[in-house]
Image 1 (cartoon, rainbow, N blue to C red):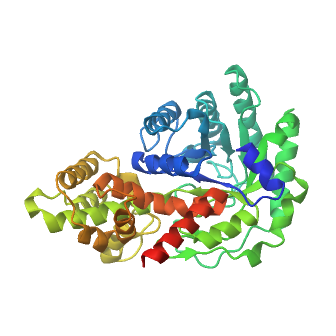
Image 2 (spheres, helix red, strand yellow; image 1 turned 60 degrees about the vertical axis):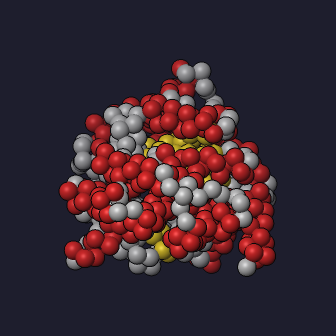
Image 3 (cartoon, rainbow, N blue to C red; image 1 turned 30 degrees about the horizontal axis):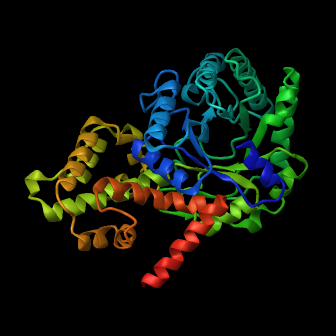
Length: 439
């Protein structure tokens, strides 16, 4: 990854996308996309997905690492081509507690990630803890980040991995999990604010004797004014970032990292990379694509099988979400009818928190088993998954439920591959040429 950043700083329009999902099908799709592209795979877990107590996935950092590596082994992706990261590592999970208690838990969190072999660490202490000023100032945020940095470095040294960890600072984005409110007009981070964040962190690291780590700070998170809420996507407008893009001109090892890039077009993602957002984070957009595929397969199932044999996947998911509303009710305002639409179809994709539920997982497995036992008629694939139908007709894809779902997620990943790598751009262009001939 540091070599990617070196090439970017040397003038190449290259970058890397970061897959922020714990869903095994999404991870498999990302691994298979990496195998098609060449290069390496960057996978990150957020502090609310995976922590020392299990997070909402039920996985600790070693357990999530093992899941990713098992999938890589199964599909033939060499382990050295997998980079693991921790996103928003700090007191976020415990911000309702007093600062010292929350920071002590955050130190444990960072140590757990680094000791498990994660080498890209986003230090994020931007959230106020109980009793803190709201919001905390840059000086306090940077001092706390330096405290976590010291823990990370000490842990890496004990693990025999000194100098192997790189860091990301800054957090000009909504808290992990996405925006709660309907968004209006966004503005990019002011250049002065970005410079202030850099200087406060540099000073805080120096105050703890960690000056030597600064060259391994590889990215600064700033807001390029891209985001999504339940029903809209705010697209990148490069005219609003002209001054901000000058901030890193004198930083030979630093690029920008863009969060919430989900649903941006391939053209906008490419512009972000060209404008030095060389690390593009994507998460909900991938599980959104997976949901599209699974719901489409459920529609195919309903056309082919008697009602009492069907998985009723969409109905099961909604019943579980209504029965256990903790992950969505604070995010989806409106009437009951509007909330029902949002639960299934919102860009925010709060549905992603429910795929690991036992009832939902059983419905998915029944769906796959039902469709794997029969030959899916191609006209139904055309009706409900037209992009996948084109690949089936060209002999590039088999019309099994698993392969159709994986390929739909890869559609979302292909835009990121095209934006960040020459190989990805070439693959997209070749596909477009083939499709033009096919039409």
